[in-house]
Amino acid sequence: MDRLNSKNKQVNKFLDDLQSLDNDKFIILQKLRQIVLSAHPQVSERMMYGGIMFSLNADFGGIFAYKNHISFEFSQGVDLSDPDKFLAGDGKYRRHLKIKNHDDIKDKKVPFYVKQMS
Image (cartoon, rainbow, N blue to C red; front, side, top):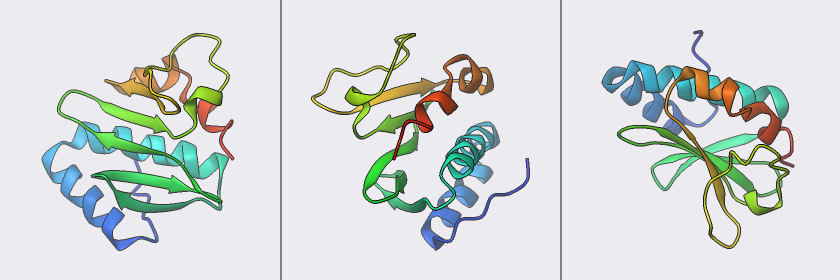
């Protein structure tokens, strides 16, 4: 996968570090970033809470690498259409998709959720 550089230096450092520690997670994160950047070319990225936060007019979500998975968090996930019930979480607003491998990106329809963000 081609390297998707961020305008944010901290995001690039995080990606560099992740690539050297866990290339599979790095590739998944880059694919998730590619989906976000394709759906919302004007998005900005920054590091927050140990992951990459995405913002348009306000923060709408982020991606976080954990030991056994990557979590794609949606700040207002409670408002998203979720016909297949892939979104997890029972907080007041936030919902997430747990991505354990490359197939989960397609199988859990990540682009469907990202396109709903504004």
